[in-house]
Image (cartoon, rainbow, N blue to C red; front, side, top):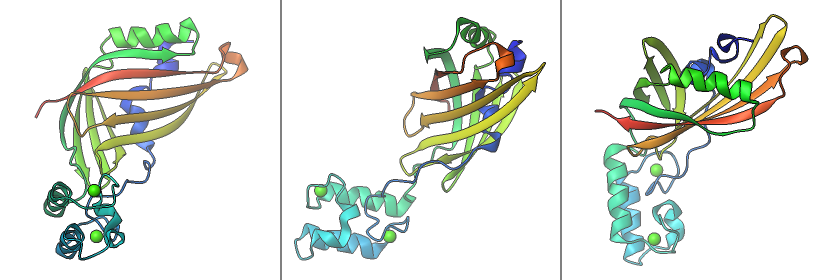
Length: 219
Ligand SMILES: [Ca+2]
Ligand SMILES: [Ca+2]
């Protein structure tokens, strides 16, 4: 089987049909849990800090879970009130140093992926545009342009999963790909986990591997 056949959709192209990511964690200061911090909630936090209100009125204001609210936790909540609960991951990111981090696949499969890495197919520049918990991704991988949609949680962790099926010359490959990058910091590590299911005609055992790359914000 050819590299093209097995790996033609590796990378962010597989995000085209991405599903939603995991549920978002609580936002500091969002006492009501509705995804935003209001002035009333800041006042509640101040009252808890002054011990004129119980911490039960704003569990989400107690970032470290120690049962009290400090000035630092209020400051974090004020930032969320001003800028929204979600970390904004919008911007341009350069992907570099792609490598197979771990693999349970046969050498034949690894070699195909490795040759694509050497060919620069994972040297990409991604432009992310965030809208709430959705992120539009436009990628340019050595001239190959892809676009996709991913999910982002309040902490700036971008995730996507996709499943694809492809048949060539009687060989059917089912691929499930999970993508994860913590885009709240730069540089950061992106990981893609691949699960390959091969039909008997492929002559390959089912297997999984993890691809890792560095993401660096360039603007
Ligand atoms: Ca709220
Ligand atoms: Ca606390």
